[in-house]
Amino acid sequence: MLKIGYTEFGDKPVFLAPMEDITDPSFRYMCKKFGADLMFTEFIASDGLIRDARKSLKKLDLFDYERPIGIQIYGHIPEAMEKAAEMINEANPDILDINYGCPVKKIATRGAGSGMMRNLPLMKEITDRVIKASKIPVTAKTRLGWDSESRNVLEVAKLLQDCGIQALTIHGRTRAQMYKGEADWTLIGEIKNNPDIKIPIIGNGDITNGPIAHENFDKYGVDAIMIGRAAIGKPWIFKEIKHYLATGVELAPPGVIQRVDYAREHLHKSIEFKEDKRGIYEMRRHFALYFKSIPNFKETRLKLLTAQTVEEIEIILDYIESEFGNVELVQQN
Image (cartoon, rainbow, N blue to C red; front, side, top):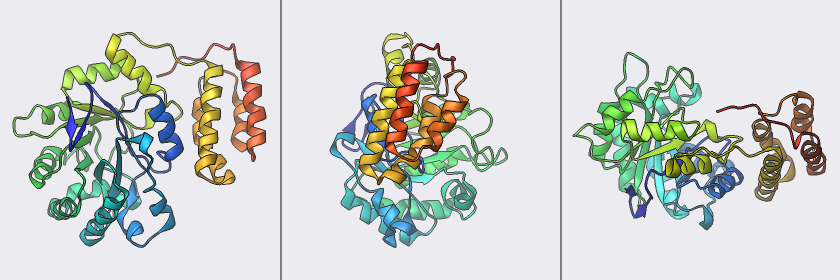
């Protein structure tokens, strides 16, 4: 049984990763609907938060039905990270996570995110200050290392454990890999089974279905798994994985009519939390993947991704339901 702070999770919990411009309230609503055990907001820049940047402050909006919920912050300035942690106390999430894993150039090359893996003294200072400032359990997320020549995640895990973090998520790629190639879970497993590592280890990377989740739990012994990109346009992945972990049987994927219902629900939640134009615009990446498995869909997809109003989208969704409702979907992970 995994426990982080005062929050207990069931056997083999499945978490939603923090993703910029993805894990907003409407997407989290859908993932919670399908059983995500822990979710995170979009990650937040500490310097933006302490400058009262409107977009950053908005990311602190949490809802009781989302709990347990975590907020993740990143940055390379200790004072800013400390002050951001103090501000996050007021939002009262269940977990405060430090991002030491983001590979995006504008973040990592400044020394934040995965860039921190090249400056362990600064990582220690920031972690110490965040933990001291936080009334909330602090966790961290990182990668295997900066590149194949510096896979120093074990050293990082020991450092962070000594600082007092209460769990560590490891993405099975280096910063240099970005999201290319296969995630390497071997090193994740070695860290989890290292006798010097006492904190929970959460594995992340390339978990796209129930059988893979089951194999990674059993083979590497991680305390939880975290789903990122595989949940975009497929929030029901949490239900599929948890069903397989419980029964050993794969659920049939939702058909077109079900996907239309889910897309419509997601759209209306997006509009509820944001103004119409922004809510529609930010749904487009999800729409593209909700219906990715439908064959001969290119023309309809283009219409869906260029529609300007909710009314237009509703008409297109009705058309998808009637025209493709009985179509056999192309099998995908």
